[in-house]
Figure 1 (cartoon, helix red, strand yellow):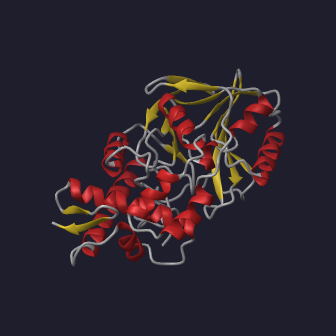
Figure 2: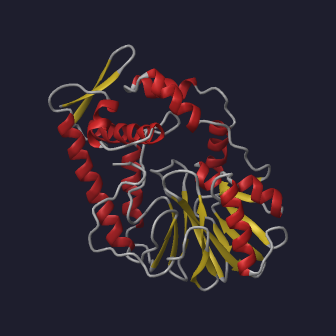
Length: 342
């Protein structure tokens, strides 16, 4: 199962009837709020960007890859809504540094002249990751956790290419309120999928722009990468619990269907990760295993090299969480890390 596409068990939470337009098209999902399904060249197929109309122009939330089909969708979407990317965009908000959300931000900024807003710490992180041509740390991270070097080097060539960052990036602060359409939205830090990810909560209209933090038919990849702070799964679960009771009636995610029951989906995601921890623990009960070995047991079917990296990162995050809980322990040698049940 693909860790980026994998279906968590679907319980009572159902998708909305909103946002059912085809990939590449735009649809209104709330008054003055439009979802654009931007095509992306990875198995997720599209990322949902949101275009919000306001008195001072349009706010764009997330951008897609720097990719021809995605740019064409942006141009067509703006035309269909009757505004110009060149003249009517007031701000571009990027929720996190992953290339399906940040990749086209420079092009959109050059086209529109609008500033790009990101959490201050995410601006630093994006520069550290995407402006660094030395991939040796990334390679050694994967090799040390069990992936063979040849596979690692091929994966690195596709995953850690350079990304042209916007020239003008404006720092957001956690808790800051931004004008968004007819109301205001609060910047909420949402770690787990990315350390410095943000979501936007419009309390007045009970809308959550959820980025990749709370998704419906897939579970966000929560992985441990070279640049990730310790305990990403712990921080993800804490963040989910803190958002569970927000006054929200409409969840606008970065991928997959729009939905309405935030509390129900948070409960499903927490249950999913508890189940996944049990799976990981069973794989190390018979002796030490590398995270890569465990990932190949848990995520079994038809993964590309790119997807294998996500599977390894997610497996490592769960195994580290088991260590934090006292249910497993790390067994380290000079060049390899393994885990076994306590």
